[in-house]
Image 1: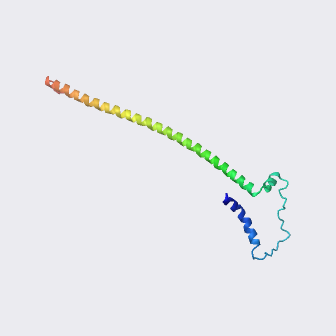
Image 2: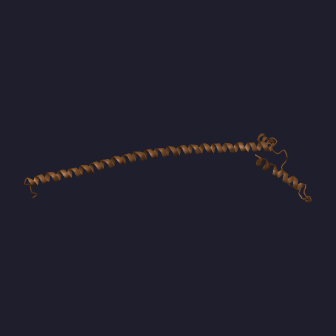
Image 3: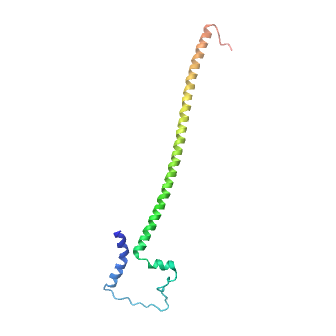
Length: 140
């Protein structure tokens, strides 16, 4: 807050010190054709009149209020985006868990099928050996 007050007062101090300095007045040759803005230029417009009547503290307070509003709106948008990202992340995490469960089930089924194939081959060898012992030959 001290910086803010210093920032707002500095220009007026600069000009008041400059006027009191050792430099002589600048000789200006301002032509009369130059029409400066009249002092009461916004007198009849309520919005302009209201703005012109505000002091520096009110203007700074309004500026801070506007910045606070913008910051709050930005924070709300950021929070909404963050919640959306969390929702999507959770969805993908659930899908990955389903996929992992499916892969695990498939792997278990493959292992069972492989074990059954090994057992079937063993039984086939046993039956073929018994058949050969009983005189069967492979004359196809």
